[in-house]
Every structure is written in C-alpha cells, then in structure tokens.
Length: 215
Image 1 (cartoon, one colour):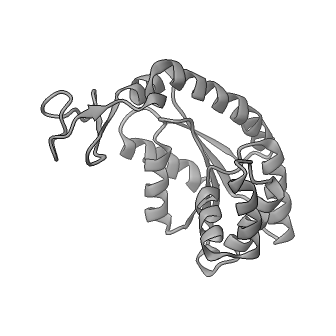
Image 2 (cartoon, rainbow, N blue to C red):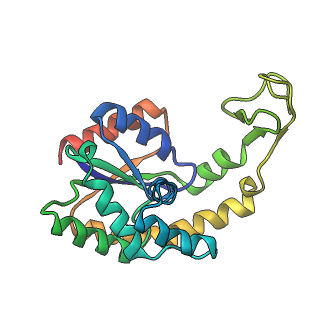
C-alpha cells in the first residue's frame, strides 16, 4: 500500500502515521529524514543537497525526487510506504506521479485528516514544554499536577513562540494555501480519503482503516 498522509498542524497526523506504520508494517518516508541521512552519509545527492542547505536555500524539487527514488527502491519499501510531509505542492505531486510511473507503480490513496480551525488552535495553543527535560503537556488534555511545573523534573513550563494563536492561525493559513490545490489534484484522481480528525485517536484510526479497506 502506497499512501500520502495530509493534515494541518495539530490534526494528529503524527499519531495516525505511527498507528498506520504499526498496523500495515510500512516505512514512513519523510523528506526531512531522507535529506539528513543523505547528507550524513555523504552521498552524491546528499552533497548536492548540503550545498543548498548550507546557504539556507530550499532544496530543489528534482533533487528531492531523486532522493525519494533512491529511498523507495530499498528492500523495506517493497510492500509499500507512507509519504509524510511530501508532496507539499502540486508541482511536487506531479513529479512524484512521474517518478512512480517510471517505476511502473502508483499511489493507492491520499489520507486527508480534517479538523476545524478553532479546534486546531485550541489544541496547539494549549501545548506547554518543560524548559529542563523537554516533557510535553497540554493545559486541557494532559495538564501538569501543579500549574507551570513539570511533573517529571520540577522544571518550569513554557509556551513555544509558534504556539500562540496569531502564529498558529498564520501557519494554518499557509497550510490551506499549499494543501487545497493538492486536495483538488488528488481528488481528480479519485485518491482522496477525507477523515474527520476529531474525537479519540483510536476512533479516528478506525475510520482511516475503514477508508483504506475500500481502496
């Protein structure tokens, strides 16, 4: 099974990805992870990517696609894989389609986890992190025993600068601008499985599995 997983910040995409990986025994393909590994290994593509990264520039799509091509030829990808964080644009989606076609394969589904914006803001703005040990809390769902104090080490908790409401809404706006065209692109291919992302993670995952059983 070859999947693309889409979802805005705070939608629980990471949780669903982990559950999909465990259930279907598929590797998760993250372009960030691939880039870091290629740079670490000093491969020709990694060296090319590092040139752009060292200059603070975005790595070109064609280089990313070539890295993905190498990754999906690996033994653990024979039964399928889950793309997380890629594609981000229609141009990348088109390049991915061309790559898969050249390998005589194609995507099976695009899972899109949908959550109302106000719910996303509530989820993200409630997050707190321990300055000392990095433990994560949520003021609504997993609050510390004592407000502002980490249960694990007694360190003070803080709100990340990108977790305030104004920044969150800006991040969500950017996601919508990038993703709406992608949804339309994949809808034309009848690949999109739209999943409501509210409620218990297990319930959401059951809906994902049900949608995938119909592919």
